[in-house]
Amino acid sequence: MSSTTTTAPNTSTNKPAPERGSRIIGGVANYIDERTSISGLVKEVGRKIFPDHWSFMLGEVALYSFVVVLLSGTFLTFFFQASMTEVVYNGSYVPLKGVAMSTALQSTLDISFDIRGGLFVRQIHHWAALLFVASVMLHMARVFFTGAFRKPRELNWVFGFLLWVLAMAEGFTGYSLPDDLLSGNGLRIIVGMIEGVPVIGVWIAYLLFGGEFPGTDIVGRLYTLHILLLPAILVAVLGVHLVLVVINKHTQFAGPGKTNENVVGVPILPAFAAKAGGFFFIVAGILALIASLFTINPIWNYGPYDPSPVSAGTQPDWYIGFADGALRLVPPHWEVVWFGYTVSFNILVPIAVLVGLIVAILMYPFLESWVTGDKREHHILDRPRNAPTRTAIGAAGITLYLSLMFAASSDIIATHFMVSIEHVIHVIQATTVLGPFIAFWITKRVCLALQKKDREIVLHGYESGRIVRLPHGEYIEVHEQLDEYERWKLLQFNEYKPLMIRPNAKGKITGLQKVRAGVSRFFFEDRIEPVSKAELEAAHAAHHGPDLEGGHQAPQVGPGDH
Ligand code: HEM
Ligand code: HEM
Image (cartoon, rainbow, N blue to C red):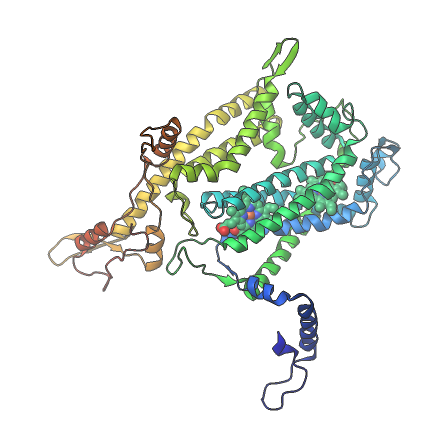
């Protein structure tokens, strides 16, 4: 920095004097540095290396769409009025003129029709929110399927998990703000779920709504949550999340020169930062394009909230679908009356399934490290096929999630395909219960098959489809050998075996140990052994007839030579 700030012309060298612009920038930088010593931090963070893989972009998309949500949300706060005081609409949307509604809905209609650029920003905010949650979940899936959550990143998985829950809470509270028919119905469902909790449910609902649903307090309360409390927590947790990405360093896929001890990629300053800056504008630009072309949440079509009507074909935002769907799948008659109290299993069972799914996501890294007994640090990512049971569990989880999500669209599926809603529900009930098991089984078999294929390729090369006749008359197919990069990729993976149970100090085997060994067998009994050095040498010797490809090297054993 200081080199650019030299003001006296240096006559002893031939270096040209710095341009006026760079002198000013350098001067400002020096001024700030002398007062904050920030250059040390910039140097330290700027030297961090960011490896290159398309899947690492998903976290970035989450970050950039969040920035767009923050900026557009701030604009909306200038005009939105979080009040449920009743007014008569008199804005420029003619069909609603003279209709009684809350100030919240009126101000949202004003944003849409009377404030310059208002509808555009509202739509950017909503589309960016949808992209934000989608990219968060895809990012979470990439972290899961590549095993990036293993030591030392389990803690960052937990912070990430909090971000996911906060993102959904932000989405739900935002969706409920305009106080239109759709948002009111969403709240009605939540109230129903809360009231379904035995003993305390009704009290909690009263506390949240300040009395009987809907009351006049809820929009104001949700507003405080939506623009103050939740974003503040989200930004704080996100800060910790990103600091941990820097502290733990980024993971990378296996390749020559990439080890558990280094990171290969571009430094954050200047290369990655420039790329990331450009990428932010691409994300923002695409969101602006979508927002200007496609309507989202046309509240003027729904009208004000009224507890009696529910319009057909309405949908929650996609990420709330799994909760709505879970409620729709349970038979309505699952209700009993005990000691004069109604216990609604038709609400408690879906709540239990949702809580179970969410807690399983939170706990997975800890469960897996308990099962493997692996206490090492992992900075090299797994290819999903090389962790078949984990990948299969992920596929089962996604199948369950998607089944629940599609259940939230059961009425739309029924009307579009002209089938009865009961049939749609029965089919989705079946995919919800059986689908995860089927997905687990198929995924595991596919992973093991792919591992077998990799093994074949490592040992015998690719089938080239070229048949050659040897001088003594024999026909053989030429196998093309792998290059070093591919071989490295295919050979590099961890090998786990089921844990052995050993008696503890008192010579006993505890029940917990038995469970652990059982789960470990479930994970690792069925596995493909990695290629050993002996096998590679044997394969090479067996294949070494005449050298048809002009001097192929014997296969080298890569880092996965266990
Ligand atoms: C507001 C939401 C989130 C944002 C903005 C965000 C952002 C990021 C970014 C930019 C990275 C580095 C680049 C990359 O690997 O993609 C990262 C890494 C990471 N994130 Fe997130 N994340 C979010 C949510 C989550 C969630 C929901 C999880 C998991 C439950 C998670 C777990 C992780 C982990 C474990 C890493 C380290 C990955 C590695 O080193 O390979 N994050 N995050
Ligand atoms: C991850 C964060 C956020 C998400 C997922 C989110 C999502 C949403 C959604 C879905 C709506 C309904 C939009 C519509 O009417 O169609 C909304 C409304 C709103 N949001 Fe956010 N939001 C987030 C953060 C923020 C922040 C940080 C602010 C303020 C600084 C904000 C301010 C508002 C306002 C004022 C409204 C009401 C206006 C309206 O409905 O058009 N939001 N938000």
